[in-house]
Image 1 (cartoon, rainbow, N blue to C red):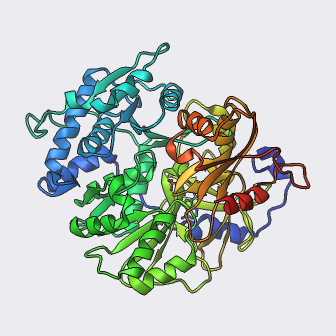
Image 2: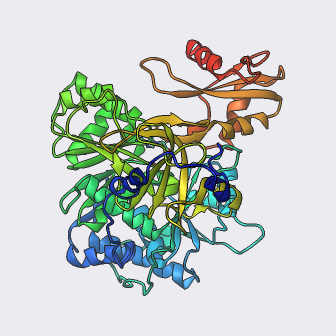
Image 3: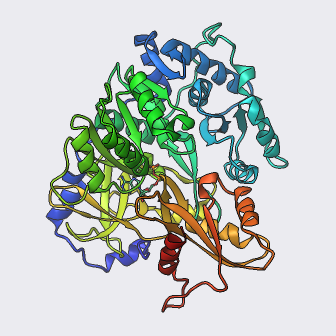
Length: 547
Ligand code: ADP
């Protein structure tokens, strides 16, 4: 892309749109400004603890913690971190499964003024070590069963890192001897969290977001799904996904509750639907592939979903057909097409649907509060309504960029030519404005893909696969057979002795499970297209036929 043209160069280009249309882009399409609260998340949550002490805040399995208990547990974590010398913005890795103590630990980190870095206990040590080093992580809080991973990723040089077991910090009864809210004021511009996403060059990128962007997003979600006291939000997303955070903490700003649903439960759609109903979930969020699986189950065995009233779909494009079918079986459960990226504090646009749309596709809707959405041509100029271009986000939600990675930050976060002094984020997504002021999503310009909602750079997998013993060259593609879920397939040219299992094991030691291809195929040579590049289209069809 040539979007990052020097600002000087842009002066020589004539604008594509009139002054009037430009004004429309910057004001009407962005919506009215919403002032941010003066207090950031920890203080806002503490306020709810005072107003709703005995309302359920979070539950998991048979256990529920009310606001008072969750806050007391978080205080134990926060006070321990501060006692160990935590300073504002110190990165704290949390190596935990999704449990009640996990919820308390995240809140504890934020209350102490630290920045939350999620680590899944099943992630390969080599990858975790890279992320901790890259983010200059100062503290690792883990569950005891993650001890081996914590040891394997301990810092050998550089700034010292403190490792602590959460079991040692949380008393059996977290309410006991509540140490009280820490005396820490969190600034709007302070770092709140870091999520690592797949990086095309082989190294993951740590997207950083600040408290102002996070709290702005939380209120935008509260608006979008109309969240209030008495609601229960299902916390289903993996802890390495930024969406896991709003699912857990947006309810805590309004006196609602989060319901942690285990991954095992989600593997069985029947079990999952039963859990939603039994735990009185009113607001859920799913990725499109799982949404379609649930839809199939509901079509086969129609049922009432209890108090469920809103389902957000996010992570990849939402197709029209499942939306139509949904309203045929669940006419009273609203759908929200939620669109955004980790780099811009999660969602930045949404389309709320109470019925199937009239168009023959589902738009990604309008900008959320305090977000400006631009569609820019290859020279960085605002594209006229209806003309495709890159989707670029500006405003409060724009994050700080990739941690300790100025080069890749500069490429994706560029000066906003329309609001001096601010930066905007280039998504790499294409889209165009529709006459009603919503956006049609048109796909990606690069090799970033989504498989079951997980964001994956094909280049990162290929890079690691080329490093496997015996491999000469390789290409990874997404296989999408009709009626089946998308999966990854790898094609390799390799020495005789290189077995599929070796390749699988090599990648599994370096990459999270969802990035390890399901199938490995050996070829004598990789097919090339007429431009002399690996013919991924041909390989995609081949993968499908090989199954
Ligand atoms: P999130 O912040 O939602 O977790 P990720 O950072 O994982 O998102 O991935 C962001 C990318 O995912 C977007 O740039 C886009 O390509 C794709 N994406 C996310 N939501 C949608 C959606 N509703 N429709 C189409 N694509 C989407």
